[in-house]
Image (tube, rainbow, N blue to C red; front, side, top):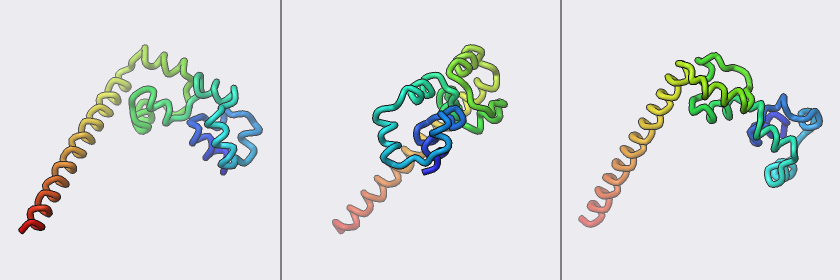
Length: 130
């Protein structure tokens, strides 16, 4: 697979990986080995960054779109992420609130779908008995 795909699966920022990783091809076996026993460079990248936007968004508790709305378009280090959390700018507060609302709505919809499925199952069971 391409290095970009492997980096995405490993949750690291491609540009921060070693040159030999960026220039080569990663087999599934190599990817599995990297996941099972990560080399020091991978351990360091995962701990300190720079982190790709999906990881930054997850660590901040916002969506990737929320990062863009907040003006964060580049990879951030763990230190930069912690500084943003400590600063807690207005955009971050708003995006976290939005993300919390989205999660609540997803739970509500999932519960509604489960209730509807249960009703359908009851009706089907009643129809079978009749």
